[in-house]
Length: 263
Image 1 (spheres, rainbow, N blue to C red):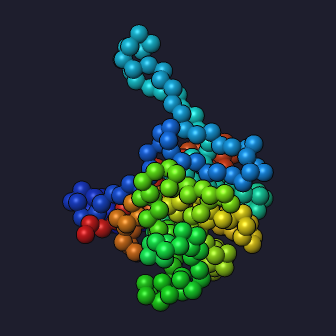
Image 2 (image 1 turned 90 degrees about the vertical axis):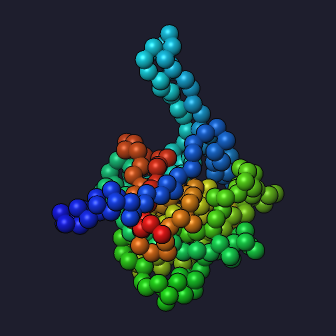
Image 3 (image 1 turned 30 degrees about the vertical axis):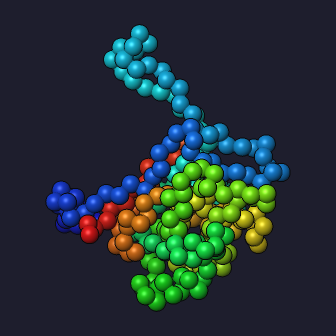
C-alpha cells in the first residue's frame, strides 16, 4: 500500500466516512462451545472461565487483572491450517508462523439468511456462489469470504447450538462450494456466524467436516462465531483478524473487526 493510500485511509477514519465494525462476540462463562460427536467427547474444549487476581485491593492496590482459561477455539475464533489433519504438513501453518498478511484482506459477504430461515441445515452451494458472482463480480484472490446467516442473533446458547438427538443442526457448506473457494478463488479463508465453520451435521457429510477438511488442506484459514455481518456491505469492506501468537497454536480467540464505508 502506498503512502497516499495509507493517508487516505487515515483521513477516512478521522473524518468518520469509514466505520469500524466489531464482528466479535463477548467471551464469558456462557459463551457456546463446539459440541464434538459422542465418540470424541473425551476431548472437550474448556469453556471460558475467569479468575480474579486483584482489583484495587489488598492483593494489588492499584491494578485490576484476571487469569482466564479456555480452549483455542472458543467464542469468535481463528482456525489455522494446522488445526486439521489435512493441513498438518504445510509450512508456516500455525498461529505463530502464519504470515501476518493472512490476517488482513478484503471481505465479501454471501447472504443466505432467507434460505436459512426455512432450513437450519442449509448448505451453501456452488450454484449460490456462481449466482452471487454474476451479480457482484468474481471473488478476489486474498479475500475473506463471510457466510451471513444471522445465526449469531439466536437468543440463547441452546438455540444457537441447536443440538438434537442426532447432533447439531446449523447451516454450513456444500463440499463443492468449499473446494471452489479454496482452489479456484484462492481466498484467505471463510468466516461463519455458527459455532464452527462447518454445518452441525458435518460429521455425516462426505468428506466429513468438509470446510475444515478442504480449507485447511488447501492451507486456508477459518473464522467462526462471527456477529454483525448485517452491518457490512456485500463488497467493499476490509477484515482484520489477528490470532494470539501461540507457539504451534491451532487457533485462538480473536477480536475480528472490519473497516467499512458509512451508509
